[in-house]
Length: 433
Image (cartoon, rainbow, N blue to C red):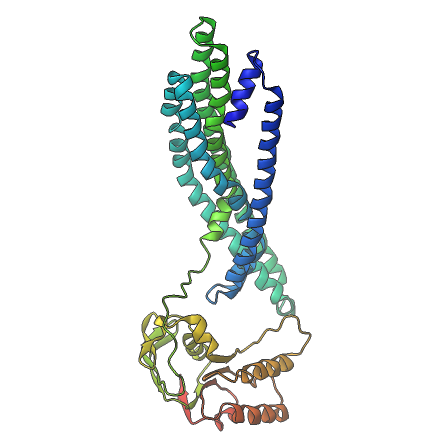
């Protein structure tokens, strides 16, 4: 940029260097193209990693995950491609311009130095309002996406009970809210662009007009005047572009704020489950209140109780997906929150209440049998968590599954959520929740 301005001023003031100017312009275009290519590849790698992070996050709702891995990760592209590189240029380019003009025209350099801070000041004032608007816009989008996903998953039930039309009205209402929040965010973005353009234009005018008058009076050479006129807009351009990219990447920053925090270096290795006792120490979370439970190594217990009592919540606590509001879950005397979750999950075998296999054109019972087989195949697992593993099976198939399960989990700790009587005969102790 500096070389282009120098050579262009030299050529227009009657000097030489036209071929060199063409080479510099070509090099600048080549650098710009290489930057865009590299930035888009970086954005693609970022999208892949974000999808993996969101899909592996156990605490995120399905509706929000669906929104994040589709629309959300694509909103990160303007942040990686535009905003991050422009932040570097917004510092480097004005500094380079001021340093160069300090040797050519100190008055112009000082004027740029004084007026440059106006753009980030006004940008920060508008940016604070932008963050609030963007957060509300994202919340509206996540709510709409989550509700729409739930409606699609349950459309058969809704039609059977005649509630489909009511949900259509709800989706329209949520879409209208999202549209309102989006338009509000766009209004702020347009206002910000107007403010930044106005400040930058006035700042350039404060430099260009005096330089032109001094040129007419003979107070400054033509080459210097041209150099100032070429470099002054370049000093403000990255700041203006950074302001525009800030708004374009606002959704992306909101998505990045949803990335689950995970530090693999802080967690402890899980204790040996063949010898570790699991203790629920006065645990309360959601509908589950003041649970005290001791599970001995190798013990098989069944959790029974009415729907909504918190049986699946107990399994969620053991998985680490649910954190206690009060109390502790201890494994071998170590708080489960202090154990590395990835290594802890590797030591478990889990069959959820409604296993989902993708892709798999199987019935509910077949999916459950596959899930049980997959859990039993984890030979190194020291703790089996089974949430109604035979709920969708007929009596004959249930007997076969129980026989296989009995052999595999012998001598290992198992916690089973049970409703059917056949399961209760397979455990050492029944705990009513």
